[in-house]
Length: 87
Image (cartoon, rainbow, N blue to C red):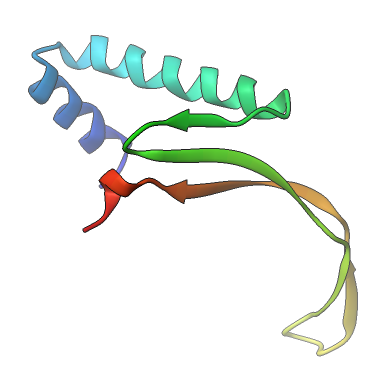
C-alpha cells in the first residue's frame, strides 16, 4: 500500500473526502516528526510506539570495492508494534 492508497482507505473508512483524509494524514506525519525531533516518544495504544534511538558509529564495507568505510553515528526512528497489531 502506498500513500495514495492509504488516503483512499482512510477516506472510505472514516467517511471523509480524499482531500480531508490527505490533510489528516499529513497532520499526523508532521506531528509525529515534531515529537520525535524533540526526543520524545509517541505511543498509540493498540497500535504501537515510535521512539528515537542512537546508532553508534561503525565500520562497514563498500560492496563494490570491498574497502572498509566509516559509517557515522546517527539517530534513527524505531517502531515497536503494540498488542493490537498482532496478526
